[in-house]
Amino acid sequence: MFRRLRVRSAMILCGLLMTAAAPAGADVTLGAPALAEIGQPFAVTVEVAGEEISDLRLSWQGHESLLSPEETEGGQRYSVLTGTDLKNAKPGPNPLTVSFSAGGKREKIEHLIKLSPRKYPVEKLTVAPSKVTPPKELSERIAREAKLGRAAMQSNSAGGAPKLPLVRPVPGGFSSVYGKSRYFNGEFRGRHGGVDMRAKEGTPVKAAADGIVVLAGNNFWFAGNCVYLDHGAGLVTFYGHMSKVNVKKGDRIKAGDILGLSGRTGRVTGPHLHFSAAWRGEFFDPAGLMEE
Image 1: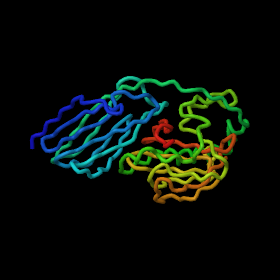
Image 2 (image 1 turned 180 degrees about the horizontal axis):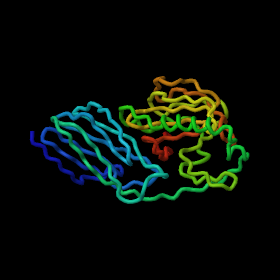
Image 3 (image 1 turned 180 degrees about the vertical axis):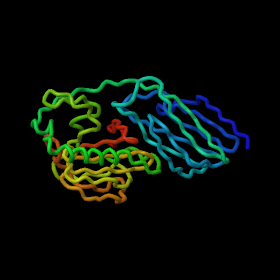
Image 4 (image 1 turned 120 degrees about the vertical axis):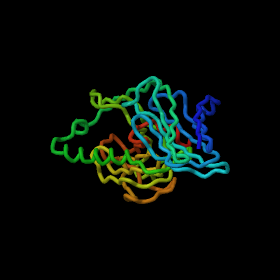
């Protein structure tokens, strides 16, 4: 079957530039931003009318995720929630690619997103010296826990974007925001990869969206008691410093389910919940995704 791909600018809708590609048997429309700020999330959608497509994959920032379709009245809809990480993203045009199979052929849509820098605050914390530089005898344990955490954040099951807004894990506001340059006892220790949410010890912690527990950490040195939830299509959320974890690896979770209780385990100065969201290990700001 003859296929033609076309890409056109159509409209700006909620900050998203709509582009389209239309093989002869399928009308495939890609929705992705023309502009995005580094460290911020955005959605990508693919609408399909006519002939169905399969094996749709999103490639972005050196990573790939497999998307699952939702059936719509006119065909199929694919969606993913992604973004950029302050540590890795570069300003300027960055390519986003969607590839799929249709009519026995592999098709591809390429789109450039212009990334712009965003200013983030600085945070200076005073903690016990042992919390800044862990004892040497703990180095193997810390490395092992970090490896488990990285693998969990890279979880990549098929799926689609979660329902927005995300459920707020705890009702409190933010005591520390995403992207802060963090100094411990005057020494730079990196950027804050999530948000710290105010929560008295023992506050129920809710799942932000439907997902599967890929890791339930027990007293990790940095993260304390923690939970990693895989929501599909490369999206993972993290809940740290909990006093109690009520779930285990492999549990299927619904949005709003109680994962455990907030606390002050791991490297902390007081009780709170650390909440992070990442696509394929690329951490972005989750604050604007949550319900008020």
